[in-house]
Length: 314
Image (cartoon, rainbow, N blue to C red):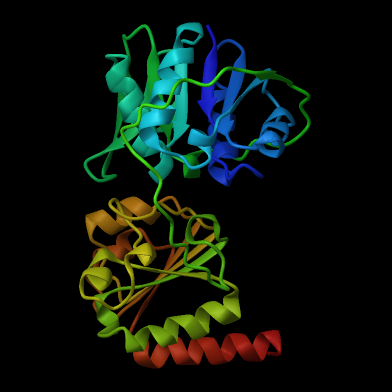
């Protein structure tokens, strides 16, 4: 048995999601290989080779892989799949785009959002918007998995895997990269931040999100939002935390003016410490919060920000 992890990278370095995926895949039987497909991606391949548990890195160079087009990467995965029992990717936007296509081409049932590996064919995954954990057994000869990265630690360096060059597959021509618009922010990226401050519909307007910005600046935190706040136009879509947004598991999650709908809880319930501020003492968010404060957020948040500034001397 052997496992192949599809690396998410920018041709220079590995995305953190890949590190968590490798750590999860290391629990599967047999040797662990990593597929790094890109253009001038030697640095990313070398980074993968340094990860503990990795036996081999497959480096594939082609202009078509300069940007992660799902159609071409899925075709590449299928081409190399004959040597592997497990094909594994992160449950990120990247992985969710590529892995189901590969599973369909291989005529196998994908097991998505794996949070625990119980055996060679048995896995745990969330269902019902994160309200229940299902233990599933895959009877397919080839198993395609996506890993919820917040459920596993990150793989560390210390390995010395060999890097093998593999021939590219002819591009499918089904899609073409046109461009990418990346929003650059001074704050940490939402999915990798140690602290996240999120706001909901209780803030009342996008203008009031400035309260969260000030608190986040003091804490060095990322800013997130509930789907209700995004749908109301308070903040852009990339702020959204939840089942249909971003999955986060920071050391500290501060939910402000968020009632705690099932969809939102699915995206943040694995946070180490959860603090909730809401005027409604019956809000569902308090059922998962480690610390809860019932009151007017427009009074509490400025006071909290001022006190943190005083304590930190800033």
